[in-house]
Image (cartoon, rainbow, N blue to C red; front, side, top):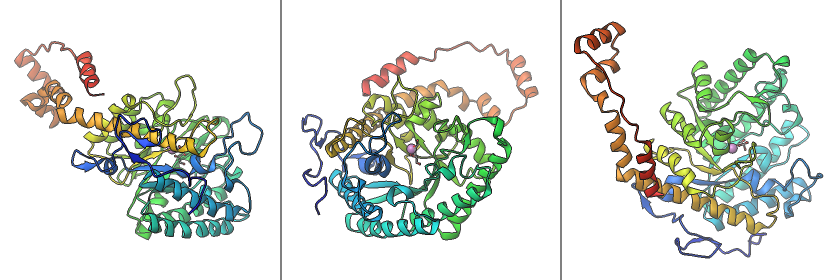
Length: 437
Ligand code: XUL
Ligand code: CO
């Protein structure tokens, strides 16, 4: 099949010494580490929106697309089919096992929801055949509930119940398609579920509506027998001033309040963690500790720019701590690592898309290999066990079993306890990590 990618040979692993820009240097898909292949650990995915839909616009450009892609013009549905063919050609040449999409990325919005759904059906019927032919799988599907002006003031948290209903109808359709395409997860990113000003916002009502919306999604998942995981993607702000799904801990509180903490997990994005003022490993460790770590949107921000620049990961050392948390959590289950990342707008050639994904996947693979070696050495685990050793003793076990203040006060006096401070040994631990990166 010919596409704009036809002159690019399939990307292969050539090892760390390769200087070929179109080869993997670290991502050896079949290499076995910690009992599984790298492909099985990372489960990498290409996202449809940045790679095939974004035309290089920024807020200062005049309208229209900077990038030239054959599917940016012509009859919209035919263009969408052309885009799909090119996308599957791209996935295959890169050897990417998974993809992710929003309904409005794959097919154009129609004049009514019925028409929009018919467009989605036409393109996803073809996607189903493409997936069969190529073996590329769906990491997750999602509905775009943030681009159309109807969602200006939110979807599930819109002051107008008609918008809530419209969003529900849209999610129903994409959730059913995600099941049909054997998607591993379904994602909800609440891009406009938040506010611009509290002056026009009934915060309590909006949260209740959002909780009900999510419960309805979970109910429908069970009704249709979708076996994948429902994921919420936290982000603190952008596009709104404040988004309700601020970070891992906030979303956990929300899930608890609406009784959904055993039904919904998190899709954590690197650049969203930094926007929330956290490190990415903090978000991963918090979600893991709360039992809601689901999947990853891999990218990075820029230290000088305070917004979601969605750049491809390229610094493996920065990702080792998060990879270590994922390994400790025993992996992502149905989740994976989706490149929610876009090339810079001056990278106008199709070739740039390849080099971006190759570099991104090599970065993830290298970070994983470092974290796996660090984990296997047992050095950090031994230091942690030693630091918390008291909790396996008599006193520690009594406290964990629910000792009262009175019992503990009696014990402190009876035994004359005078605990001494002990070093946290942070520099030693940092030096250990540096031996593995
Ligand atoms: C936006 C973002 C979204 C979600 C899916 O910042 O990350 O692309 O990943 O809606
Ligand atoms: Co994302």
